[in-house]
Image: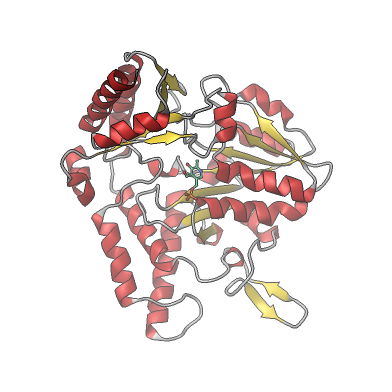
Length: 399
Ligand SMILES: Cc1ncc(COP(=O)(O)O)c(C=O)c1O
């Protein structure tokens, strides 16, 4: 089955190429590239503005893409906001909620967060005068349930990742949602790492906002999604201003369009949204239980193979429960960048550094960061063996 999946990705046919950086960006099926090109060649127009033929085609394609994302999330199309990426989605959520926050309030973010999910709140805390509280993580890089006790009645927003881009740990979102909602707080979930691993249902999880990226979900770059619970979106002001998000404009003010367009100022990523829909359609054709079972075996092999090498320490859970096929590690005496560089020389693509997660690196005591190998539906045993051979060879050189 892997080879049938791999055939959809022309780049994976390159001899000696082992792509283990899917948590940064998944490769995209050739079909998705064709759909984007076909859209731009036949229906390239702005949306919800023109009445000519191209404009109508673009409107239809963009609306259909929104429906496709809604289907992926088990949501209504009116709850799906297209953005330029997950970072922009999380910033829009923060900006839209900013007016509710001030001195005396708190916002809780976890130490697992990618900078995209904590910096918008850190920046707003300085601007609006509320207190930022950090939710603790366990030594193996999971959200620590005991740390949720800092969420009290003063807490207005809780921001957590559904799955860590470093440790691969999957957060118990229903647990966090229960605590957040009992305190009266809004829950913003960063789904960038989880969405590539099959359908998610943010409403059922208890989220109020859920964000993910197109480019990690086998789709184009330059597109992301902010899902917002209908009742929450309806009450919030826009975060960005410009064409498309207004009703009437006078010399002294303007009215807001209804969600989701209220949150889509300017020309949206039309062709990219259409491409994302094609990517989600490709994902829908996979046998996810089989894909997950295969990736779990490969992850186990990575964890065991790496642990057997001298000086290797795993960053994140050692067990398979509630974790993604994302494995980060350190090698005593080897800088992550040197290791990544040597692996690149063998055609093995991994990521080394702090992974845009410096608060987590600090609390785990990883001053120099770590190396991350991450799998996607197309990853196979040869990729994992190439990684293990490469790390063993690098250790022999560097230590
Ligand atoms: C957990 C997590 N959140 C957010 C982002 C940012 O996503 P984007 O590149 O779409 O802005 C990333 C990207 O690495 C991520 O891993």
